[in-house]
Image: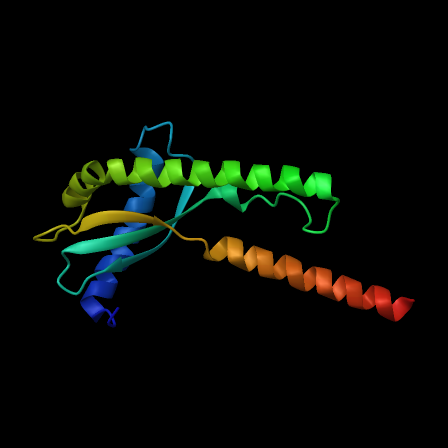
Length: 147
């Protein structure tokens, strides 16, 4: 995607702040859990906006990756349940996109409000996974040096 113009970047930042506030206060859908708006990309013509969200319940660590085979099966099941919850959150937000767009129109002084599309942002999960792998590698290295 080409670089956003400075105006599009300012609009994206404002939309991010407003959408986060509106989701917290105005969306009454029980399928929308605790979500955090991590970023917004607006097209240069301000016609569409991709809103990236992270579900807070998905950020809870499920356990250490090195466990017995039986525990790993339980760990995988818990992660699959979370993915279905994440999909429900994103689908519910996409259904509420028109409502959120109309609320944005009242709050922003723009001629045209961008069409909203919600996407799940997995960068926080990837960062947590990488951090856990690094911590495990450092612990294994310390264990080898002490033996």
